[in-house]
Length: 404
Image (cartoon, rainbow, N blue to C red; front, side, top):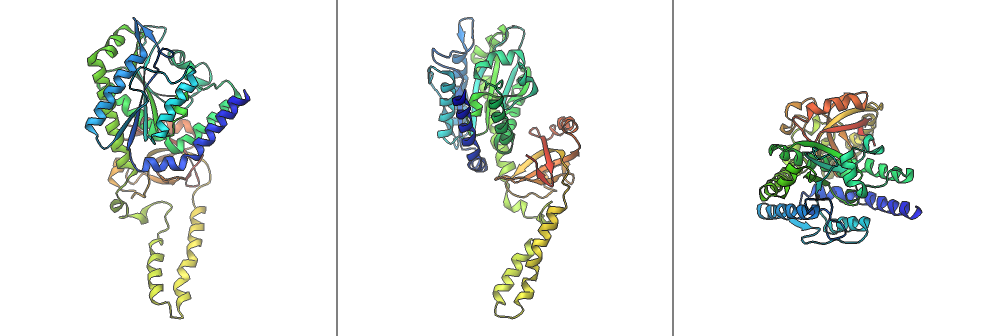
């Protein structure tokens, strides 16, 4: 048990150390996508129904998706964890870690793991996409179908020490890759639904392979092998092509989202910086005064010119004292590496109602709407906000900053 806890602590330390590098990778856009065909080899065939193994379905869809990206988005490098029938280890944890290692060593910007689902009840159907996380459901026995199919691939949350470490990691994840993973997952579900598939939504689970990857990561369940109709669909050429195309459409939307939302054009963001929360309106003035200072350096009036500079700390001090220190909740709709005008067109109907909240990292500018006394009230507002911003989620705010 001590070795297990030490191993998890080591992984957590590594994940925390990579946060700065991780955020920089997202800021550079999506350059490398890693596609993981779940299961594989004689050791880990996955679910089996009607003489068909899950590993084979996953691989066919993975190769089709990769081919679509390579043809349609040649600027993006595609890396496969496997392109043939194989497993990486006789131990499942090591096999999953090997897949994550391939993704990490490739400096991946997005990890997509493809799986097929199964349940005891053959009537259960639908598609779902998982991201790293935990819900109250998982702290008990979890939803039956999902838990039974993935129980060997879940981190052991029954051990209190392990659970505490993983929860600290999940909390930290929200400020690095969490929002991007959730965005990708929602886009996947959106395009599945466009095919008429029954959506089981975006779900959070403490999956080992997602835990070990240092990039936005999703695991998508493309259908239930235990359902005869869905099995026929996901094993057919037509069905696999449609699934691959849905995933490809989600990738295109995600890449566009990263470029548009996080890589903001500087020329658009410099227009109204003075109207942005937490920016001293006098900030551009010291830059002008320093130019004057360099010209007038010999003059004895130099201290008078520098006087506005000595006032700047006072402005910053009052700025930090102004925001309310009481904790409240808001709905985050956008994050940016650069400052946006609060009337920016990308904010849509929320222009003028958005508040800029600061955070650490390469994307310090978070744009939020609403102010709620408790998380439950903010969560009720999310559904409406997501009609315009599908990736919107609840954040805690204190003193004008994201509260960890």
